[in-house]
Length: 200
Image 1 (spheres, helix red, strand yellow):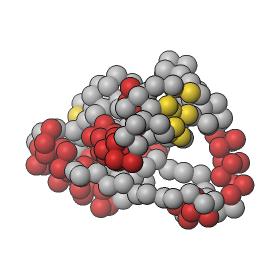
Image 2: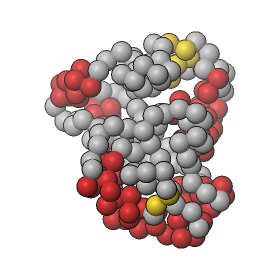
Image 3: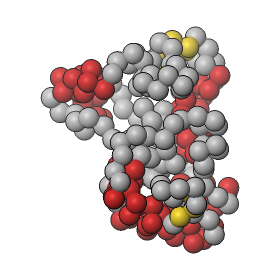
């Protein structure tokens, strides 16, 4: 739906595809990302984006528009409107046009398009290590099974128990999430590579 809207406004839309899948990456790393080591966006999105940018903009003249917004959590790093030379984007200029709008303003902008509903977090690497329990409660059976297979293959769980610090398998975590849904998302911090667009 968003792609159709962008094309209708005259934009050329290019869908990028990572050279490795989430499953491939877990096999390479021999484990899952964690709240302290959130490297998945770097490998699945960042490298893919940078390779494409170097092909179409080798002189780094482009300005990148990123749909990232500031969190109400004051402990998280604030997003500026502009980054003149972003170290995460090959020194290119980055603009965050939505950096200071809240959820209601975002939803109004989407409503004004007439076609696009308020977004969910990107699903290409579902479940995300930063998923809220509400998001986990709605995880598809295909993604649950995929995660369960990876947990068995790697011999480690992806998540800690939502009720404590003990690690639990994905199905236990999903059951806990359904019993105690919470919209609060886990914080993007430590080593998170969300600069490449995760969590927008």
